[in-house]
Image 1 (cartoon, rainbow, N blue to C red):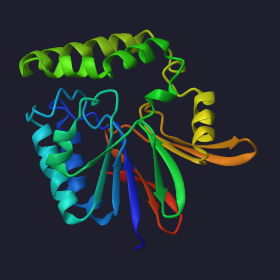
Image 2: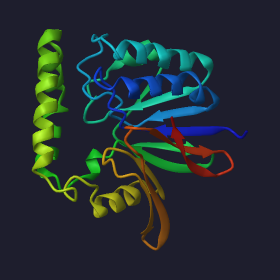
Image 3: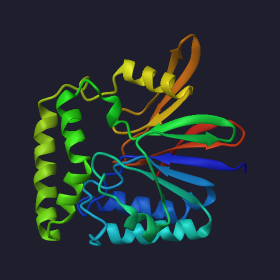
Length: 242
């Protein structure tokens, strides 16, 4: 089997989704160990409130990621809109490397840019403004200074409010803006873009300044999981994770 790299995103792990957690832990202990690299492109957790929260499933996920890294698989983590408080403590505990909002990676000689995907949704002006505020060092420092029980309460409130806000927005507003996609590929000089966030899995054939390009949108894990597999022969395909 040629060396391969796996990409996943949007698992939204929480105590209320035990089946998804079970599926992911099994994936880490079995399938992922055969891969050279695993990229987790954000929203691994439904609400991550700090590296000091070791309640379930955070604790089990950290242990399983550490086992995977110790087995030889390289793990990379990119922040999503639900787990942007993942910090260096998480990286030390798991062995996973943290990536910036846009990261250029090498897929066996093919350059690609990976991102969670929320920054591509530029039509959602309300969200983008809120994102700037909560991603500031001051906001994060203030949030993490609060007692754990207060952060847990806030996380529950945020999930409720997020559901209400989504109900008021069209799917088009919450989807990636086509111009933002093209600009991202053009600005990085790359023809492969991989992201999640929108929960609209697809492979889009694009044209950037007369050159072919591809945009891979990863799936949310719900009744089943999915991973994008890219191997050293230049082949890619979508795997179902059951």
